[in-house]
Length: 139
Picture (cartoon, rainbow, N blue to C red):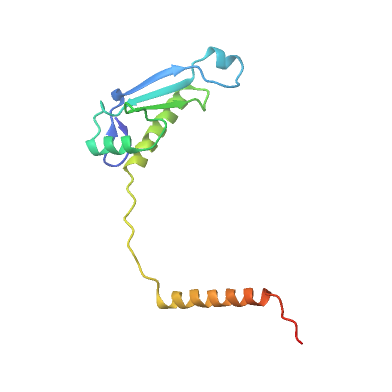
């Protein structure tokens, strides 16, 4: 079981790993060793609770396909183990992001003192702008 948050964990059997060769510079190692990892996680077929599945599907993330499959490519490291751990961490972060619900905003009123300070700043700023104006000729 891959722990994701306090209340939800993902069964490792639901995560599919494919080893591929990494892109970019790296000399012969890049051409010979399949150190990059493709992680695939099928949201609809997973054992996640329905609200977690819905939250994941509603995320506007390019790593989630139309069919609801999360695809994460990890190739930052030269070892498969580190790339695999990196991919799992990114899946975990994606799930945490989907489940994180911001606290609802409570409407508050400005204090009388803050209203006074605001009006004083406005009048002071208006005075500064008035002093910048052209001076009329005295005849």
